[in-house]
Length: 95
Picture (cartoon, rainbow, N blue to C red):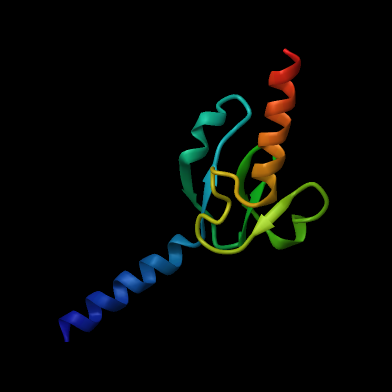
């Protein structure tokens, strides 16, 4: 039936799109709200100085990787937020 064919087509298109990650560059850090559909070979999003798509093999050392759509959020969460706030307060006090 036509409905099942259309559903199958939409599911195939979503699979081809792959993982979505936030992307940005050092030159334009405000662009971290931009997203990118990753190629099928990329199975992780990463956070570093820039954000983009990466394979799990490259997620070592300073490269912080995560799984799932848009998991490398442009808004920092968890302990990194506290560190950011404390360092900002210290810098403000000494300026």
